[in-house]
Picture 1 (tube, rainbow, N blue to C red):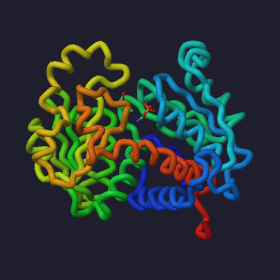
Picture 2 (tube, rainbow, N blue to C red):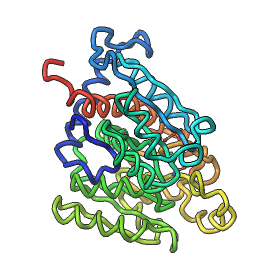
Picture 3 (cartoon, rainbow, N blue to C red):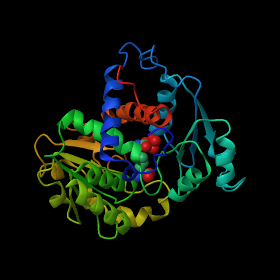
Length: 320
Ligand code: CP
Ligand code: NVA
């Protein structure tokens, strides 16, 4: 994948996704248990390379894990604060791309509009990584697939259930399941199901992979007998103006102990974070024994290191 962009999981082949997950697993198992900041001191394949990070919206996990991951692989990072960059205001998005490609080797951007990523990709010769857009969040789902595999092994006979807002995270889950051939049920209030173009594309992928995709408005049917229950914020970044109407529509989709009773007894509970405790997920569930939310957060680091290796040096040599 050297030199390519990562804008959505739909752009990767199933074998590319599996390869990223395998590399992430290897990197995780090689992690130095003595110190989070200096794992695998001898493995620095990105020495001399620079990652530029652009954030139009806030972030904890994406910012921290991309910076730490790049540094652990020997590279360096420049974090371009949105208020200084003012992309599209102070200068055009193509001009930002044309400048950055002269100084850095890869750009990770978190943007309001997915089209901004496409414009960056069109005008920069270096890889562009989607760190979340209004459309998809591929790096999140790569980390989540790793987490699901760790807890549930082979996912082909498992049921993954997503309840909540049919937005960027749900969209990427649809692409991930569609690519890898998994069973994914998505339950959202009417009017909040994933957009038609995402659903059509995911069904197209499912035809090739054999994935079973179900979309409905019934939260109980969605989680019935599920092995994985996943939820996300009801009011994503950028949608704050809709908070009142969303908070009226979403309560039946809250991941709480009543909803969990309909899933498998050993179902795991996932959330991309940040969580709005008492809204889409209760304290009891988030802090309970079935929650794997901080494993997901940890796996952002390993999955994104694998992505950086793929895009910058074509992956991890077999000897590692
Ligand atoms: N899950 C996730 O992307 O977290 P941040 O918004 O903190 O980066
Ligand atoms: N759907 C959420 C995900 C945050 C990581 C948002 O876009 O705000």
